[in-house]
Image 1 (cartoon, rainbow, N blue to C red):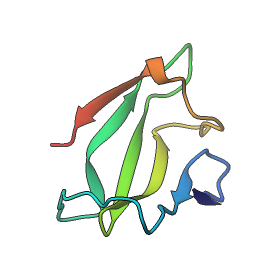
Image 2: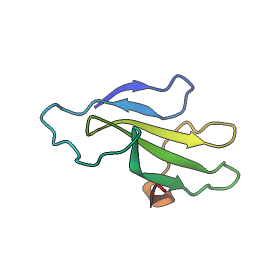
Image 3: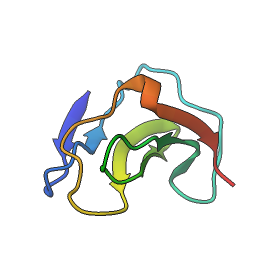
Image 4: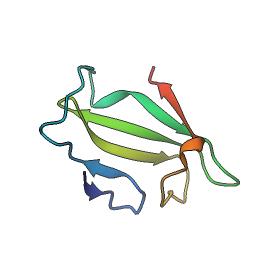
Length: 87
């Protein structure tokens, strides 16, 4: 469930997962999930990534990180997202 949004106007959201949902067994040294989404830019829009944050085994935040202005205001379509393992 979305429980908060980024103040800058981008589509990044804070998430709360149900207490009864299974937890991930993936352990990381940081809050970053082992995968991220690379966004293919369209026209003159900047490239970007979708960064997944995990707390206590549950997804907690989806960040649409843009590397130029203006910041995106909506999520990209699924066909524009390539899932990559973080290095």
